[in-house]
View 1 (tube, rainbow, N blue to C red):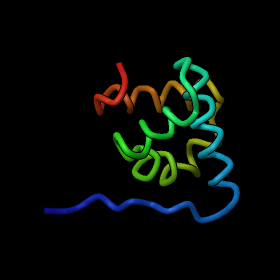
View 2 (view 1 turned 180 degrees about the horizontal axis):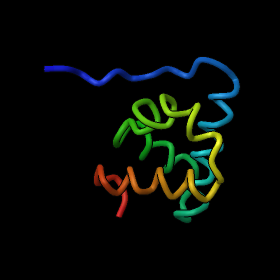
View 3 (view 1 turned 120 degrees about the vertical axis):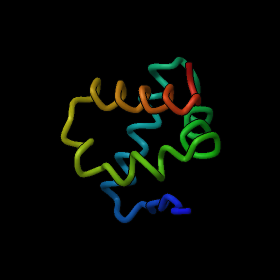
View 4 (view 1 turned 30 degrees about the horizontal axis):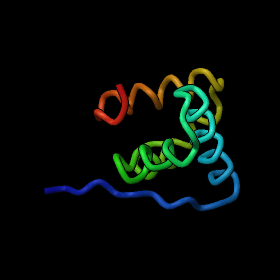
Length: 81
């Protein structure tokens, strides 16, 4: 069985992007950033399996696209309705 690799934040650009994503997911969902962080890490690990590994592609997109895309992944994984 192949396991998915969890990517670690490598630099300040990736860290700033992760924070940007967490804060904007929280704003869009009307929740606090801690709850958004938990949904993206503890409940699903979308941060380590999707957001950080896809940083190079995602950070070139618009804010709306990024947030819509992450919300779509969250729905697919049953993390958010």
